[in-house]
Image 1 (cartoon, rainbow, N blue to C red):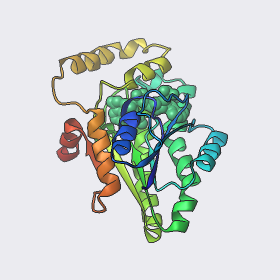
Image 2: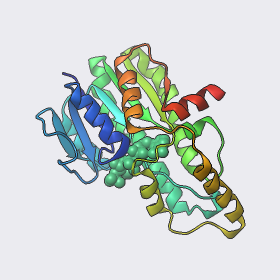
Image 3: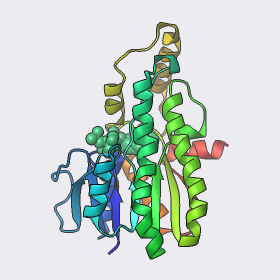
Length: 248
Ligand SMILES: NC(=O)c1ccc[n+]([C@@H]2O[C@H](COP(=O)([O-])OP(=O)(O)OC[C@H]3O[C@@H](n4cnc5c(N)ncnc54)[C@H](OP(=O)(O)O)[C@@H]3O)[C@@H](O)[C@H]2O)c1
């Protein structure tokens, strides 16, 4: 069976994508910053390997250990919510290093073997926030919008080598560890002049009873991106993301 390598499998979408492909008998390389064997079904088809996408050494080690990779899913990512004035430069750097440069570095490490084999698929997980401008999310959105544009451009140069690049854009998924992990980065608090806006945004979320996105929605969208050659370049995942993609 083909081999899929997924980044950020310790929780949320990455973990569900790993389970989804493992259940369909794929060989799965589930990577995590801190490897845990107990979160995935015990199977000789599933390997858990360490990977921090911000470390060149870690990337080189995982690609060497993984062997042949047919599909790469760049899912690892971190969130952040604040006004731009409340966003420390170090936080902005960390967000781009993980969400944007981590994706670029992973592709640079894996593409040579795909190009030589004339076969491969890369799926980059971005976000439905790139469909519309939202306050307090400027840096996070920029880190993901950059991946959308990067993916579309690199897809053109890889097409002659039969390497496909797809983007999956999930909607809001309150059930993953995303919010909790983002809050760990958000230590400085919100600047006082922006507090009315922050309260308005938080209240809006609390009142929002509309659809959200599940990890299963994202795993299914990644499955389609990988297995359906006619899948569009950008696939929204989750009812809310699909609605936003159609709103134009
Ligand atoms: N949840 C949402 O509402 C939402 C919506 C749209 C898009 N997304 C995107 O979907 C992706 C998955 O998010 P999620 O909701 O599943 O959140 P999650 O539960 O927080 O999962 C994120 C994963 O990324 C990993 N990660 C973070 N930094 C890393 C690094 N430097 N190297 C390797 N792995 C790293 C985390 O590992 P650790 O356990 O080591 O921290 C974790 O496994 C992210 O790219 C996120 O931006 C999320």
